[in-house]
Image (tube, rainbow, N blue to C red; front, side):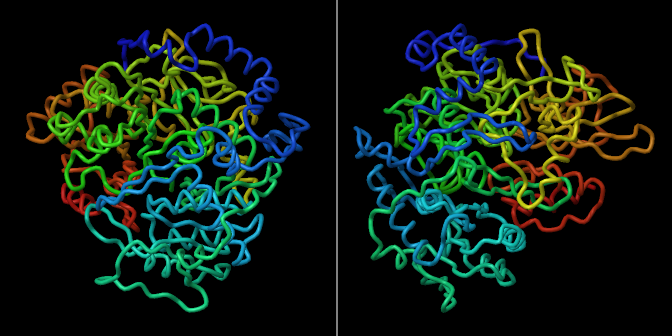
Length: 640
């Protein structure tokens, strides 16, 4: 990750950007750090409040902070109703395309009507403020409508990624005590039909809190009939059929819970991350506005799934508060062929495109010919999210997709942070391939040693609270303190990532602290090793893990996939070892290099390094149902 190339924004982009110069950024940033209450008060004035706040930040119960105490607002109202009085009423809010090719457009007026009908439907089933509603839906308009309908009436939504197993559904429903679950009869993925309701039926059979299951009809049922349980199951279309098209937005207290989102923990038990209303609302509004430089004419496409925090913050809540037009696609990026994403960008004139490094590396692996068939000239800004991006993938994204004219916002944040903490500002920041660069407003990062001293390379920490931060772990306040405030006497938020600062004080994310491997006393970030592998022209993707070693303490295993048409053989292994020896030293050479057609990934594209570690150590692998392609695991296992 020793990267010296720098790419300033173009003069043309900067002149039209919300923030146009480094001087303007520095001035705003200083205000946000030195007088955060004034800064966040002024930002909040852009939004609608039924009642203004008494106090911007209440920190007397640290780490249980409160933002905009005393205020009353509603996030659904700020996403939709606020835009109905002006020119955006009949503007497209959501452009949706299903994997088989169906299209649907909802204006802000349409979206308001559909949200109100479903909100009234939920109320008719007895759902009230504070009740938990689980959502197990693929990327269909009803998922956006359901999320916003919950926010409208004050129900707490808990979105469960529609690739999780029945056991995962059960864990999340039981922990949250959900009263209602919303799902779909069946969905489409790579041309296959997946019976979602069957998975949910199995998942909730022992969940005593579930009173109703609402089912969206997506599939014609000729080959796959959908069994409905009398008294419990109800069709979505029947529920909304005769509902009123207006539903008053509930006046929510600033710290009322907005949603629960479960994320994996080191103990194996998912953590129910709590996000509340007002602070999250303000933070997603501002980060979306400035980091994506959103304008009324933009067609914005974030390729994440709403089942993850990226989909909550940067598909639904942030962009809709900014009156954006959302592009939403249901299916896989390689169906019916590898050019589906580029086809969608050309077809709908997408201008802002936000995707994951894993996806970018897959695009590289598939080859440039799929891109070359399409006109991507509508794009003006690119973004990456999910994990550090290696410089080679960044450069391909910059040149091949961005035509060297689109700034790339390489964003770092977490489920827990609610929104982006580190990112370039597109009209301001000279970018470096693979670098998250500088903090967003109100974020004061520090790179610390284990002892709490500021260092150039160490552990990332955040010095002061920000509005979008999590408010706790559901039902487990002690775990919240132990997980995120366990170091440095609880004075800093601990995100669990390693980082370094370069000569420009740009911050480079080095991966999880537990992804730092100690080989014979040398601490090596696996992200750094992965980046070195990908520098080789034959390599598409890489994952590196640490494994127990009798002499060194830990050794390394590299997993590598090669680009189409390239050969995976002993010569390539020698070349990769030579690169590692050259870039780091021979002490960092892997014990083993494993070639495979792909890496084990979730359906959202996240590499499951935990599974790779378990394979290497001969451990039982457990449930693999959430993987996009479980057969990859068997292919890798044969090489051990």
